[in-house]
Length: 228
Image (tube, rainbow, N blue to C red):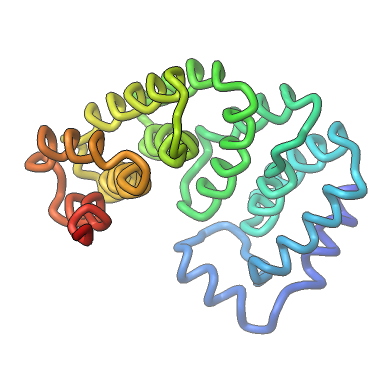
């Protein structure tokens, strides 16, 4: 699919007056077309069904490079699929996007695509670990968002528990960083973990809660405090 055709399809889905509202909400300086997320979902689902993996990766790269808000969201959604064979080029592409993250919505959609690639090949977490010492706040944040699947296993294997502890170590190294998005990411990881591993969540909070921002402590413990 040609890039201009893909962009034309996106633009056809724009709603009147929505672009200005979305730009304000997402604090965007880049172009915003005004396409609601469900419409982007439906369009990219069609693209995934009709394009080869190679063509999806190519189109995703081209959409991302336009620096249009919805195009970057669509690029991420093109690669958000558990079954993607081969997926090395998709994973490599997602990694190239990380240093340009500057918006939570774009970053979270790209990290959702990256989560699928990590679950397929957990050894890729070695590459993610390098993000934790980046000078770029969004890259550091992405290390927690992209590893969220490891908060969700009810019966984790020993290797999955090792990864869980590894990421909690990253989170511990972040607790003194009071940037709101970093604190929110720590809280998000712990909140999701608490549903499946309350013991590890409590242990982390016992050791580090007093160094976290109050809102992050509250969010992290939300499901713990609601327990009978």
